[in-house]
Length: 56
View 1 (cartoon, rainbow, N blue to C red):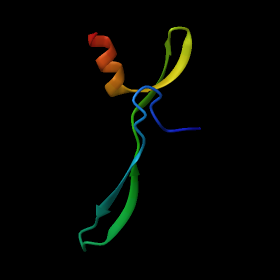
View 2 (view 1 turned 45 degrees about the vertical axis):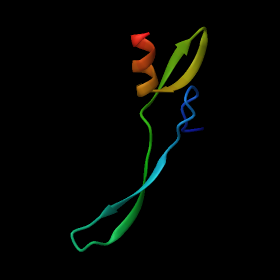
View 3 (view 1 turned 60 degrees about the horizontal axis):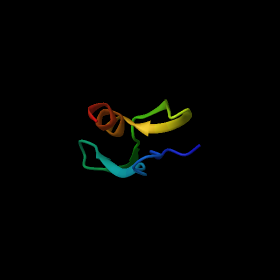
């Protein structure tokens, strides 16, 4: 199961959290993906693309 947007091809980004003692812990920041039907096909689309499509 892919965690990328099928329209803009954006994927998860790698980040880091810092504790009070400044210890770094790696983490992933995933997109807010939604399953929507576009032109009769179910597509995984990020909310940023969804908002842009609603404007047009």
